[in-house]
Length: 172
Image (cartoon, rainbow, N blue to C red):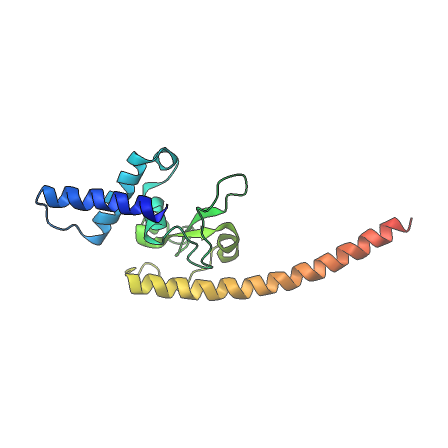
């Protein structure tokens, strides 16, 4: 979402709240309100976007929380955005729709992280505050970084073996 659109939606919500004399909403309620307004105001976001994941994308500025890649930069067959569960939904199904457990991720980081559990099995015991969320992201980032290095080595080795196989075939 462009910062301009975000500002417009945010302004509409704030002026609406003030004009009706409402008390300031909690941060989570504000985020949900912004996501709902975005869905109503933009055909692109009106269908196919899970409202909780949309909130996560807004909160994290539409960037992969692991590598920083801007995810809504372009549209097309190579669309690179997906949602991720900080604490894997395969291990913590009760947290699958919890906005605090959802983050935007690029396809590559999402694949690398896979079912990594940054909470080390304590996911049901923790409350995902912003501080905890940042810590889980930091731990996941490190695991992803190490996996990328290892997969790069494996790829280079595989690429060399492939080239040798092609050369061998061409000899016949």
